[in-house]
Image 1 (cartoon, one colour):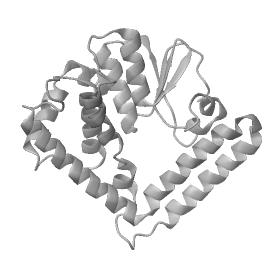
Image 2 (spheres, rainbow, N blue to C red):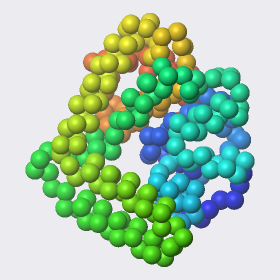
Image 3 (cartoon, rainbow, N blue to C red):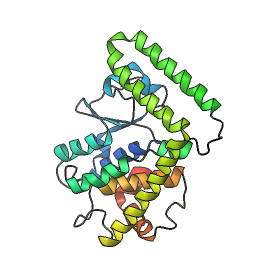
Image 4 (cartoon, rainbow, N blue to C red):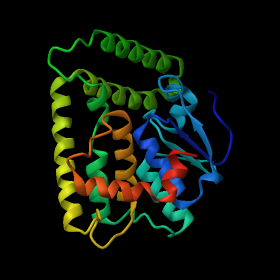
Length: 250
């Protein structure tokens, strides 16, 4: 797609976990109808010069509000709290909320879904694809010299992605991290009467965890919560919120 000229847009990809977060953020605020939702074709649109200008990492989501680009789901949450008032408030600057958010943001699900799950797994096709996409980035950098610094940012993201896909030890690290995160969250929910953050019934942490769990159950394992009763009960309550249906089923 080419760039859309509008003051209020959400550039996203339905298969992106953090795009899920951004969509749910807008629906929680009840402002989703104020924005155009524009899906990007990853590998093409997200590395086009017009998008690299908006988001040098070439990632989704990017929110355009009143013509201003806001890349990254956490920055979007803070912006929405500042511009659309405290109902509901995401508490995006509360250190206890942010601690939970960052724990879940650190999870690299690409490695879990498409990474090198065994030391002997054949990654020849993946390596060839990554080599081709890296060459395309270098070509774009040559063709757009004024965007060289921005394309270098994207190149770093690309190389990090390659490690997630090709390194077996990286897969093992993130698999262990997910298991640990689930155990910690299960314990927290039990200690806090079903809340992620003590004395907070619904915050940005809940948006992140709900959107990420939805992604994991859709892309990785629909029964991923079978041995985590507190987390499963929490997820069912969160998905019963009207905002969840608006975000993912309307």
